[in-house]
Length: 471
Image (tube, rainbow, N blue to C red; front, side, top):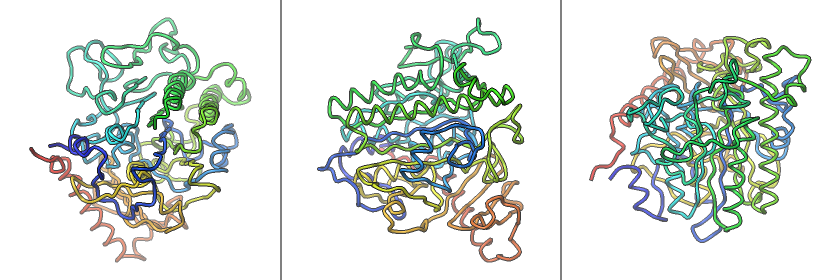
């Protein structure tokens, strides 16, 4: 039996995973289960929100969420690029456990268990809307980065990973008129929306891409609410990934900036409006109170350096950008709302991340986690939110190509060369990673190197298939 069949065979029995600090403080099987929504943007940097001090971008809805809900000030994507991070959101596992090492590499393996597959036997309806990027969506035509006629080597669409309803692309599209080439609008861009096997979507694809995505997500939510059925929604916007294009309304809002900046900030503000629209419709459907709504980005901002004319995304004062395991590549905006359980706003400085979504949802449902059938890299966020602890019980570990990193509650270990050399930073005092303190803390450095090496060995064992149960 593989990891997927393991959970399916359990029905509504307890889910088995090892998650340090996870409790049973949430819902029991007999109580009402919360709805879950995972929203994520693409290449939105740590500094690309109003609430984080960006002097240009207008994000009133995200700002309100951060002001009234939980604001995570050390929230980490599992990787500095998008595909690996996406897998971590729905498995709770680092992508080096199952082979999504980088963008356009590997695919979601059938043996892995996604949140959608876990929640369906518990009565949830599940939907994916937006960017998938964990496998190809067709074997019939040329599509996006890797879809090719007759090539099923990386075919792993969301509808084969637990999602009932889909409106999904394999990879990026323009953030306005997503089916058209921005340079030559009369030509197709070449990445298509799919809703099932060989079911290409051809209607309502003009205009702002974030609105197009939300046009599909909201009816799904409304139907579930009307049927009094709990729902799990993944809404993964393409904004503000290149090619960034803003519609006239949002383009005009930033008229004093260079053209790239106008498009970049314009498409973020357009996305922000859709977040506000989602919240309004949750209220109108009388399900907002019982909905866990998460928001984050998949990695840091694109480009070698901050530049309004070419790379307007901001990592603020953090070192590094997309593709880097320095803070600027993996520390991203993070927000959570759950009115039924979180009645007041709070700021959490504990390191948290996308690997924590899976165990947090399981904890909220009241499920006990242990070691079988394989390791989870995240832990529940609820102990932090409920004020039971301010300390993470196990560090967050990272690997991206030759880069390695480990961050705990205060210190961070970083290697640029696969472990040949290491740097150590006090992230609380020095979030910009300006001063290597290795010489001052040799024992801590040695301990972190050992922990990181052990984690790498654990990932290798997972990648070799040791987590997948045999018949």
